[in-house]
Length: 627
Image (tube, rainbow, N blue to C red; front, side):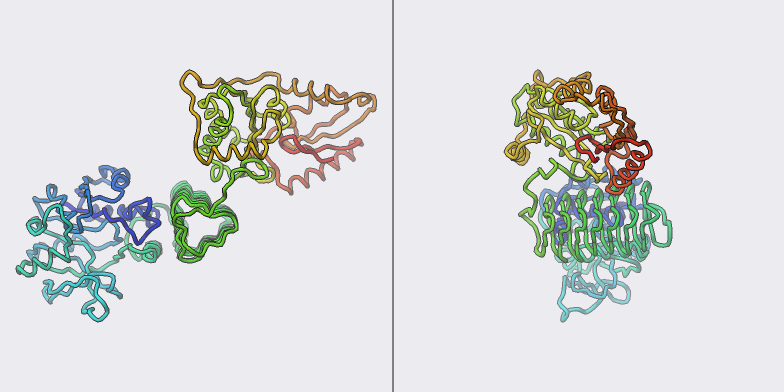
């Protein structure tokens, strides 16, 4: 026997979640609703299934394919225009005309016994069996009344309270015989309960109603969507959860990294490869999607967070829904009933009030108080550049995609064939981003001189030697998970305000220059950079008398790139220098304020015990020091 899954609805009441995603793909406990439906069909032996699609049809097809991963055979019936509940099934008549078939909605969460429903249909020799269930508030649904033998006596679509004569409502699940297609006109909108069933009843055809026991939730509103998540976590509906129950009600999927210091109060669900840091509190009825990062101090309660979301430190999410690929920055607050669409940026310390809708691809600026829905406009930051160039959290705000676009925009502000000098600190993140940016520069007809890992003063000096400009990528001082992309002019100085505005403008318009194949830029790696820098520096400074003074100093390179230059420089000065912390540590490309304080205290102790004249401590990129 075959089944038909209706997956063509637009889900307008669920906007903005359904602005970029069809309703059947909305995740419930980190699985699309329709996947729960298909798994139910398979459990009851209905593995051959026709899926009717219309709105964002390609997304549904791409996700489920031919059904092989679920052990099913899926085919698709495409609607060019909305055909109603009966018209869309008629559209799939060719695949269904030979035998009894079952119709079910792709966006309702249920665990009904479909085998029992099919048996009831066959025992009663019905043409149509309507699956019914009892609900406390029938106003949203079509209500149905049946006699003692289960035969349908009356239908009424979406009644008022004065018309309510039963609490059994139509769930949109039907078992039908192929003869029913004779009553459905092709290629016009037709509904089962509004058009076809009244006609069948008028002709005295056998229509039966089966009152099902079990769970059923029509996920049509934000409230019912959040309720469905809670019901799955509470075990009120029999569906498969993907993962391990590590303590009662606390479900954690494969590859998730949950710090033992995080407070988890179930029932809750944490998806594949999510990362939950220490000091986080996740409360009941929260669903954290796959690849989500929850930073320390964050608080989540009854929140539904889709995949690839970043939840910043001290942020507070209550009873809200967060769309995929969205970034919630530090100390942001999102209140009960709010819905944030896909790929939004919610700035630091901003507040999104309850029941506000923020549509996809919007930016809420830092500190904003949003109490009305953001649909068209973007309340966002206008400028890329901050106090330290272009800064942000690595792989959240500063992604390889942003770096490539930024390098393309920078190249577009320069003449074809110009040379740009590039450099980085010793972190892996800076290395990865620099490689991406070099590719973008070369494909925009720019020659690149790559210094690799050098101190910032060396990058500036080398840029000033015949380059049209340059950039350095370093870890933000004191913030290990952030990076700064610092742009230089032809003198090696920070890019001027006018230069920043020009780059900003090209980036915003996305007017990037592309090189023809014969114009792709060259990549070179200059040699003897440190010797060249040391020689230039010593020629520019009066060093007479230093060697004769007999100075003894302690130099702390702070495990940064300054340690690459200091030994040869100090040797040529003729100073008796004790160098400490010279090695590079990829895992610690910057230092916290506490580490810096304790480093200075230790330096003081070493200066005293070595009876040195003084101590110097460099920052990790060698541009500032403390005495």
